Length: 297
Ligand SMILES: NC(=O)c1ccc[n+]([C@@H]2O[C@H](COP(=O)([O-])OP(=O)(O)OC[C@H]3O[C@@H](n4cnc5c(N)ncnc54)[C@H](O)[C@@H]3O)[C@@H](O)[C@H]2O)c1
Ligand SMILES: O=P(O)(O)OC[C@H](O)CO
Image (cartoon, rainbow, N blue to C red):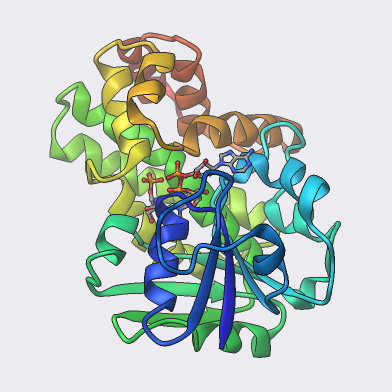
């Protein structure tokens, strides 16, 4: 099979590496990469199976400027909620192609470990089961895939876990201990599920790879860009400097604000996301911690 990947960042390159094991994979990036299979945007868009691996916050503008519907299907590999429009990625893509040509990738997956062909398990969610199964065939044997139809559950899991990961990095940066981090992650899972179920997600999705799996991974490792943002905030470093040194996207920085806006509008209790958004705007972490611990949710 032939696949075209849009986005040559860490995740696009990792998926390109994985797909190239058994299939013809082409990768497009706005900054040319000297890797086998690098192709023009036109060549990539000519592939019937596409994978979108750009940051969530550029989805809208990128699709408007570049996407031409020629009957392709898209596997969305980005994780985030648009901070300007406060809508899910499936809603952004649905403006350009029908839901039966859309699938969403989620689960615990550091690009760096995929590049080392380490065992990984992922979820492909789509309202079109046949499409999900088609995308499954692209993955090599070191990546175990599961499919389901809970698109919202996959999206909310992948997006929200980044926000909890920032909180976890703050917790560890403040040296609050393992008890505190475990409690934070557990309550973060409850908060993610509450938010997702409100928008139609299946609660069970949050107990699986998309939710708990990706949350445990991201909230407990310095391989996570979002976790590292939290460490920096705990040490009172300016967010601009943290992101500059990171040099890669940390989706939770933007998704936190989107969640708080959506939660406020819908009346959903999102205490951790709320405090993360406050800390991203400069609220002292210890003050946030005090407010979080005094909440009676
Ligand atoms: N890195 C991982 O381990 C990993 C794993 C799973 C999912 N993801 C998700 O994949 C998405 C991409 O993450 P990443 O790790 O590849 O990020 P990255 O920071 O490594 O790369 C982002 C890429 O997007 C490009 N880009 C940014 N703005 C653009 C624009 N307006 N137009 C065109 N290109 C633009 C950058 O040049 C860069 O190549 C994110 O949503 C992330 O959450 C990442
Ligand atoms: O580095 P992060 O925090 O964006 O996490 C990467 C992946 O989403 C982990 O599943």
